Length: 317
Length: 289
Image 1: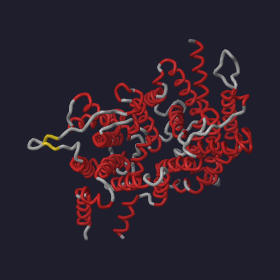
Image 2: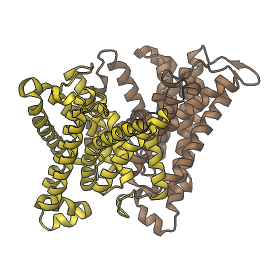
Image 3: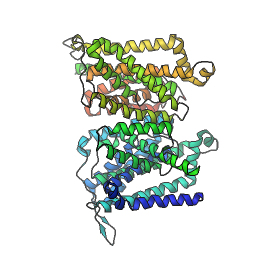
Image 4: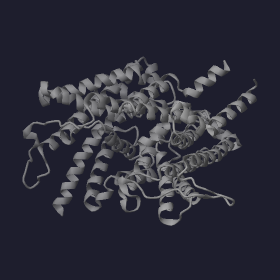
């Protein structure tokens, strides 16, 4: 099979599995909301990987934009307007714009220092969400708000009560976001990101404005992340400060690494592994963390390209 | 009011001294090995709990001395077996790995010692207040500050006057050249890591006496240490020292003026430093930036 055909076959397989998920998930003991969770967290992990895997920059505070997206969406639904699309828009803009502004402050940092600074700034938003309880509900989280029916002109879809309908709503949103992400990565801009990842100094010698590119990539990634966060608020009808905490950022990074950074679909696979393990092990023992932790440590040490990286190497040799 | 401010400044200095002890270990490891040790908080917790386990046999003073050494040995083993494997790779792998280790340590502590908090008893004469007017200065807090001061002094003497210390300082600037000159860089990194973890273990014992022990306490204390390093400047231990004290006092003072912002002020301080002087107060130009 040629490279192009193999790629197309893989894409077709991924989408077939995702589209048919509400049919096969109950057969293997899952439920639809779990599938929705995988999609949302997977999109978050893909946003982290957009930076980590394709620009070579690790943001360890990305949960801040995820959580801000959730709050933006929730606050709009609670106080301003009863509209799901407007909620998504509000969340995405809130997280994306704030992320872009702070990004301008930190793009000159590199490597572990960049990671440290992003964690610390992410924590600022955690504390704001935690302390400003009159607006955000503080530690108890933001509620009540509910996702609203979608008016599509010809028909109205109730995504609040039907979990399958909501799954497909999230799947369509996910498809749009990943299509845009894939389009950016294939564009000359995306190729430049790879060049920076591979050798920043040479990219600079070629006259590429490196800081500008990293800033744009960071900002785009924040928008994707905030979009995922808005979907997360819709999924739970709830937003809470823990969504902004750096341990949440760590979860996203773990998903990206488990699945395979530097691959486009790896983080989604990582999210599948993470959410399934968490759901399954936590039903047996409260100490689920140690199992995921050990699995992840083994991955970092021995399979730094993640699960998808291993599969791909097997396929090509 | 004056007493309130004095109370909070003193408090801030004491808390700051504690941040310094933790941050300086992190800083040592970061400077030489270019690894942000996310598991530092995990080692702190291990130090505290080991002391808790040893206390019935060795008493407070015995546990205070033995626990940091045991923690350093655990740290040495972890470095040798796991962390040293990622030195040759992109520096980000060190961060990814230690984050996973922090995850494992926290849950491991919970499995061994239970999720419930544990009290760590300190000698009665240390828990008393030293004067009626300044009721907040307990013997234990002064003792903590004294311990931090002694440890920092020892560390600086070690780095200044011993051969190993000189090599660590040289390696911070250029480890490759130091290795070419015939120094065993592998061993140097392990030693340096163990010293850093020793300080984390000691922080754990001291923190246990003040706050009690909980499996999650390490994660909460890690963030101020990061900020201390960023504010002080990466690559400078003096910077970390000043940075830690500074954020301690700043958050102590904010606790009087605007209580809800007492945590956030550290981050504000960090943002200001990054804007005005991106390399940090004492950072060298070009270090890790």
